[in-house]
Length: 435
Image (cartoon, rainbow, N blue to C red; front, top):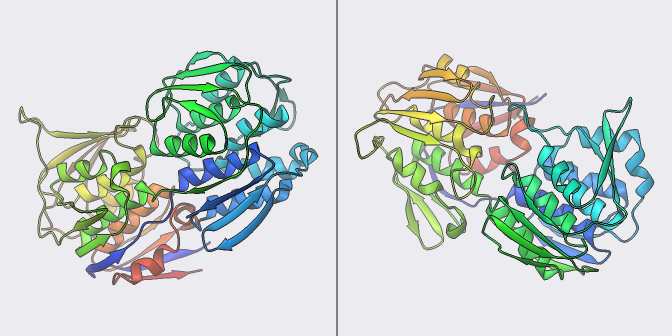
């Protein structure tokens, strides 16, 4: 197991560029399974989850060539479909949540898929019901294979239909879209997720010959086609990493520019930091966060305490709740953080309380943060990263703390943040990776 050793209290300054979006990468790389032609994808982040998905595709027989850093060509023209039945495939899928995004393409093109219980962040129950219900609407059947804890899905022919999703699941919507592109007739998906990742996936599929309309709305219409061809696609900057850097700049920054953020795809993220009193300046397609001696939490118009809550897009992404909570620990004022979508994501606040933060954990979904207004510095400590987003939040806390902290289980951070310690060192951070 690897750890980060962080000497806190050193101001960060300079320029940093966000990586390609992790969640988009997992979707569009999986979509390469829908054609036997070459698909070239640029700006792929060099992170653990994405690299594991690429390795899994290689094991399945997908031809993968690296054109340049972050630039890969995929061709799924000779797959080893028998490998999908192997225990090795099931084991690898169970350690990578992104593997669920292969189900839709495999079911659509090859009429069968095997589903293992996926891995990923330990942030509460993350059900796959929406995926299975969508596949069922299209005509697929599934059976549980006794003794292996896997499901096998089959469909001789998928048929388009109208469906109303029980929740606006991002991966569920992506999977159903990819399953629908070859379905006979027209499919309409209501209450579809409409995050930028989904929009990018739809644009890529249309460039491959799909017929998808309603992009960026929660009502998608997909007219089935017989075949898709190759394309070239560029992944957008990772809005979660942009938000993480905004939080880092607010806590320990001495003037940080975040380059090429694709501002139109950030949605409400900059505004949420502004509600905590953080100055976020847009300069073209860049963001500048100046040094903050203090930042004061807004209140609602009626004077009640500010509440920050996650919601499906265009609401606040739940992946930034952890970062916003850490930023609030040094704000002037109090804020209620409401994590609605996952019931275990706030449990990492115990580590922040140990560091001296004033936080009341009301229940698994809500925490009240009473800000220090930079008058009391967090204390360094030893901690363990429970998931990707809590990991980066603890890293931000450690960068601002008094003393030297140690964060274990940083493989969780590596799953979502590319070469993070070297990029932060270029800004002036004192951080070292150790075994």
